[in-house]
Length: 368
Image (tube, rainbow, N blue to C red; front, side, top):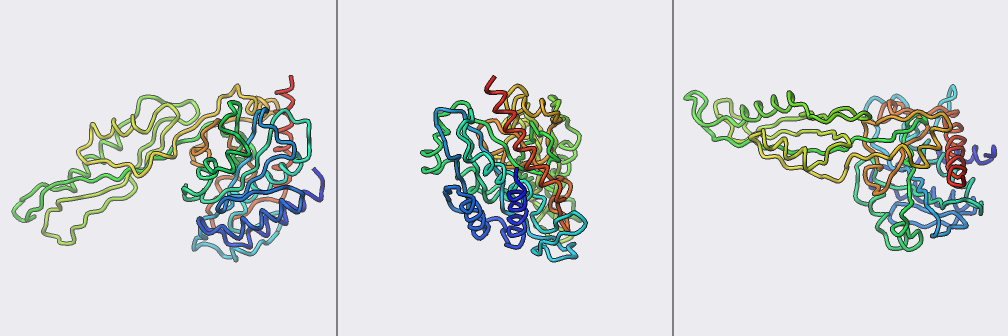
């Protein structure tokens, strides 16, 4: 990696921080990423707010490696004491909204892609995809791009059985080989209204409370070595009743379910519904748990470089990628979505260098 490319990546991250890019509002950062790639001689494509490119000597007959991270951000929380859109470098830290999640990962992957872009002797292809709507698991991000006609025609990834992905998220450059799935369930308990003074009706709130108590106590049998047990957490409860003397006939609550790789959503839902009186309706079953096998070339390359692997409790676009993907990137997940978000400048340099080393080691592994 040249110093010029490193400096260019830092400058791009500063530009991205200074450009608001809330989920579904990423048009301007998409344009900035397009221009940056083009300035480095890369032919770019764009679909909605997703920007992508392939290496110069792309050959559909070779295996393919997708490099992906997102350029949307959450909205800044009330705890900020500095301007979230002013990229300030102080004491080795670059401050700003999206700097850690996942701007540092994104510009590191972009720089890595530019490094390999003109090389003609790689044993695999590279695709870079800077995508939208990750923070809301939106339908117009990586999921839409992988189905888009031009993307599928150019990359032919659906015809390639040997395809892997690197998803850039802050993991302190360690390998998240597994990731919890997320299923949000809307639960509705139904009773019968009555007068509280006369103890009439069937109290839907009590039904809900009993179901919640069972949900809290129940332990799913299969425990993952990487992700631990399935976790079910009730995060809100509501009854439309506003009168103190009326027994509520409905009560709704929400269950946040974090699933390990040993269960399908349908199995978890069936188990819960069999024991609970409330009617359970999942909002979505898209964000499935995922795992990349330890014997894949990508993970083996990381192991050879001395990297540790673990299971991640958080969910990312890895859940929406229909082929094995490794989550890895500079920065620290604990800083994500916090006030005065930052990433260390040296973490970005480390990210670029170690992404390059990982891909080169993977190329060496495949060439054996």
